[in-house]
Image 1 (cartoon, one colour):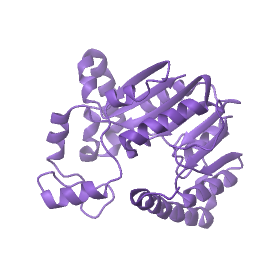
Image 2 (spheres, helix red, strand yellow):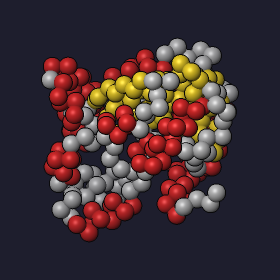
Image 3 (cartoon, one colour):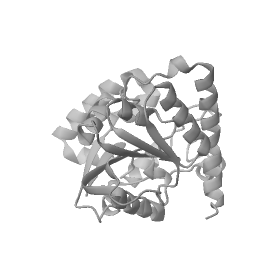
Length: 273
């Protein structure tokens, strides 16, 4: 099937990143040894993510949106039989090179998460990091249907996703620009109407909610959602070195005042088959 214009643009964007990473791998391979989870800088989320995945030795794991392959390689080094898929062929090539450098066996395939090239019940675990919010509401349903299909009975799918549950809260924070214009993380103020429109048109993601993530997994036996990040939203203002402390404070606040979870920034959502 011929990709749509938006898919082609997205694929081109990720292919550029893949080519850049592949060049870096070939130039300085010893700098890309994976000896820890790429998300270990987010201590609480990484701890909970690995707890949800459980023991990895001999488990068949599929990573959706594997990107450059760092997490897939880490899972393989932890004993999993790892497969990764991504829409960009150059990212897939870079992931294969990363696995070779780290001397682990990983299978990487170019594929769309809405149409996975695997048999039913092929995996014990499925994992995706910041992948679902790049999908339309229709493709989100398809991706979770495919995830359900390739999971073995008793398997679990775990996704880490950014969310915005409060429209009012989202509007308030969008009043303030983030980053510097020209940088990858730049976001203009919603009051800058022309810049904001251009930003939205160029973006390939959208705001998910806890409710949408839960309802989209209706075919699963159980869905759980863990919330993270309230004060951690200040990280871009106060610097990344304070992220761990802010997320620790958030965990305490969420336990003491559960309604605050509605204003979380990230969720770990687990789908049980």
